[in-house]
Length: 218
Image (tube, rainbow, N blue to C red; front, side, top):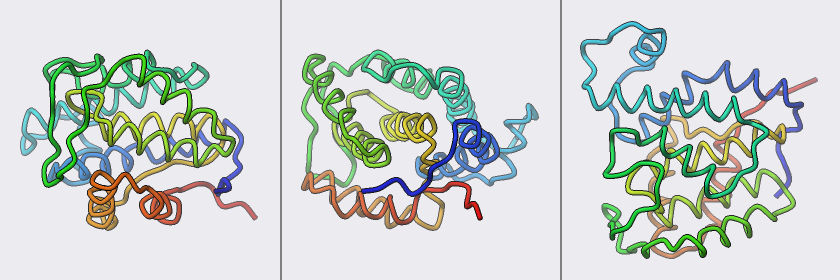
């Protein structure tokens, strides 16, 4: 799986900032938040949106803070500690604990698969394994899918996983990963299949072909 884009760091950060509202909107939609792009844009500009619920506002502002953290620490090493820090922004005031590995069982709605209780040593080993991948886009996608399926946190696993994937993409000039609203249903179906089977080729190809954006140069 070759990288689709070859940007320099400045170009990729420019792209990310330019598309930040759209990325947060897509992430919110993926979480089932029924709001508009313009409501999110208004909220991120510091203006109250009375039609939005408090938990929706919290989710959006947490995503904003998590993205800011990613961009401020783009050169930091990705490891379990870093991933936990991202989750501490993403799921702040949403879950039993944020920024810490879950200590109890969880289920995934509509899925037969039940993720095992995460063991720190195993998770660290798995993360290191995925980070050894040569091609950065594949590295980002595969680590993202691993983190989604393992559900290592009480909440915010999909959002945390996508942010970590995008850190890899941005720091290596590979563009950004975002699931547009019109692709969410298909993505969720493929994600359910992946959860149940642990076969990732179909969803990996879908993300590669439909969910990676960059700057097209002449």
